[in-house]
Amino acid sequence: MIKKLTAISLIIIFCLSTLTGCYNAEGLENLAYAVAIGIDKGENDKIRFSLQFALLGNSSGGSGRRQ
Image (cartoon, rainbow, N blue to C red; front, side, top):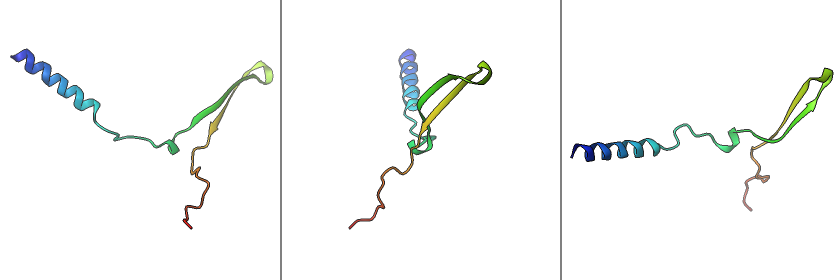
């Protein structure tokens, strides 16, 4: 009986900890995504690392007014 109660308690604790929700969620507009990554040979034979990021903002393009 104690083993069943312990197993059920552990399952409930595991389910509650995985279903906590989005307390610290970030929206897509707050994140940066690398679109292109480049590694080049720069000045004095040093490696140059380049990144290009996608701009995720208000991409609807409309004014939001209805006609």
